[in-house]
Length: 142
Image (cartoon, rainbow, N blue to C red; front, side, top):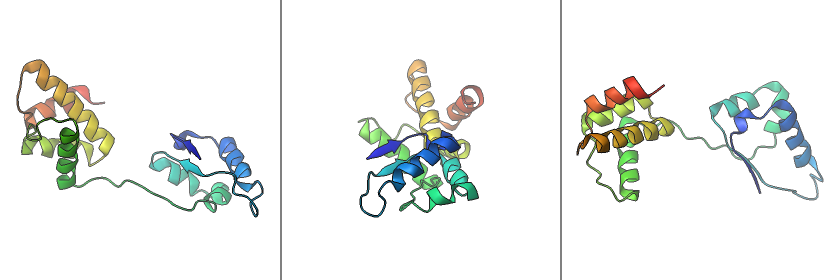
């Protein structure tokens, strides 16, 4: 099995080489399993007509849709549980702010929460509120 991470960054020539490898003895031997991992731009790229031959070889497509507001809260709590931390350190206003900025994108949720947790430790805060999230988003997020 081959896993290509950040596959949305692959150029056309590389994708064509992958297609040729997948064609090798196609009828008699399956030479490998290939997993292309990337951002949504990968699928946008593969939808282009020039990639139709590659797209035809795709058996399964999985995507992670944005989380809803409730799912965002559950996601943060699960991460805190895994870290064996308190799950009630983010107020509801903080969760609203996290969701508003991240629009449910897991990578953005992680980044905001990490910055908030570091900030809370530095300032000796036991709770992360909406004001702290707004400050972090306004000053530390690109």
